[in-house]
Length: 227
Image (cartoon, rainbow, N blue to C red):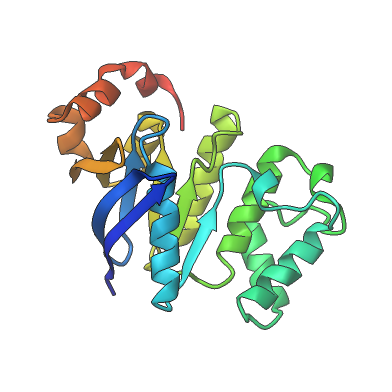
């Protein structure tokens, strides 16, 4: 089922930081939202989440850093239980085992607080929590920027392997064109609060039309990065 939003926008201190934007996301879509820092990517992501949730659609959010999602004073088991409660998902040990295994963190001690796990394990835990409710869409906002490239690539591989065939769509928000190019079939480029270009990943990489897209594609050193 297609997710649709129209007229998303945002104004702060009298300044428009997100101009009216409409999107359609089909079941299973893999979309990348790219652009320079400050172009409005995260603002669009948050506006999209708010609008879809107001429609009653299932949307999950994975932030840039696990610090944004995990309380250092609470155990990981507490976080998991709270996520189930928030999603009105009955406790299910089999589901928890399946999701933690999919992200290869089933051996971690959930009785520990977040700082008892590595950063990579923490972010995989946050991703696993995002999957509890089998969302229609997961918005990944710079989900691997706090990780080294090898761990980042492994984490994204595990997520994609789990999502294959589920119908869950992903929106990957990043300034890293290399990460997006390897993970999505469609790219949208933002600049100054607007989506200025949208095309298949191959078409945009081979023939960028706007200045913002050309600037992103000009630096080809990202081709060597594993993620």
